[in-house]
Image (cartoon, rainbow, N blue to C red; front, side):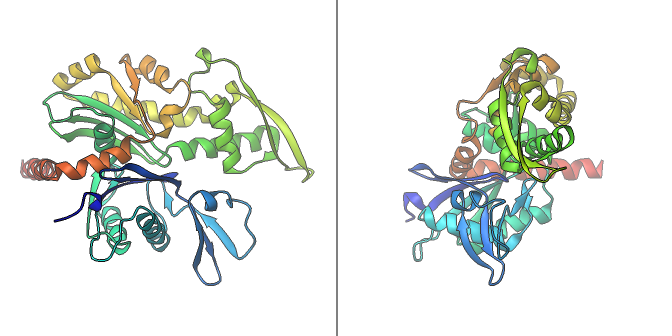
Length: 347
């Protein structure tokens, strides 16, 4: 008989990894960063400790993110990171290896999906399953997706944005963009470089986004922040002040892509489910849901009410854990989806 703690759900995010243990809840919340000694490939630090090293390491040490745009960019490092987090969560004790559920973006290829499963197995999982991010986000947000009614989820993570309409425990239509919070940070870094001739790091870009960023500056208080970096002309340290409207200008292209994806999914939603969504609204999850004004922007652009989940950062991790207790339902929906796809191909 397996113990209660033999089920583990992992939100393997581009920016953060969250680990859910059945019976305990979320036990780990760490940045997806690994510091490695290049000379012997030995892991120096993982998570928060490694994140503090970003952009500040000597030549023989590299602090890196092994996931990019929601998928594995460096398989070996991802496996080491997973092994570390599983051991910290108490997931590998003798013979009692855990069943692990890992979330993946809805747009990944079969090769990328296999890589995630294999990395989890190599890291110590007895069995590894995957679940699409919007499905996990909906479960984690406490939404009832088993009924024949439409539910729409927009999950804005660090590397991907997943938009999906769910019904009867499965995905009816979806769109996955390989952009998220990291792309916002990069856009701010480029803007500061172009407008102020100042070089700043991605961590500074993220701090600017969190402190003064807004998706809807017309309805936001005008805020300012001093940012320090290296002057591109003199090469000396310098400080500038950036405000909310400038940050919005920097991230406007990425915001337009998110709005476009939401509209595209709504256009492909069956009429009956679209009517349900108008009544119930769109649910926002993921770290991007915390960007000021993102809910009002989407609501204004789509004409549909938008609600931010109670704990948007934890929704996917909670959903992966809950998915392990309803594997039979998810497998049945997956088989039904495959049958429908094969029927469409025949037709």
